[in-house]
Image 1 (tube, rainbow, N blue to C red):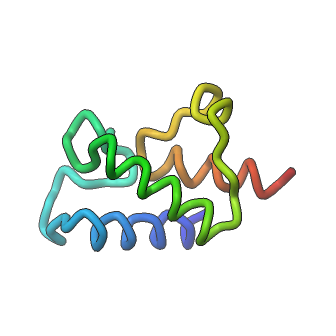
Image 2 (cartoon, one colour):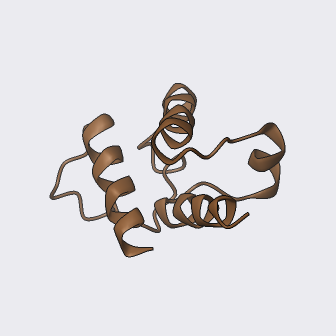
Length: 83
């Protein structure tokens, strides 16, 4: 899980240009409420999850699984991979 968290954090930092010294950016920060990712960015992040991790994200998944933090996204990927 730690590797997955680190990979996701690195991708999000790079893709959304988040400074390394941003103290609020943690695996548990709400990416949308804190303005790190907007709705267009969410679409790009879903595409990244599907392509990189081979994990399809359905509309039902978006309703069933919280995916607001890096930790929640990593948990979602692990759950889907376990099936």
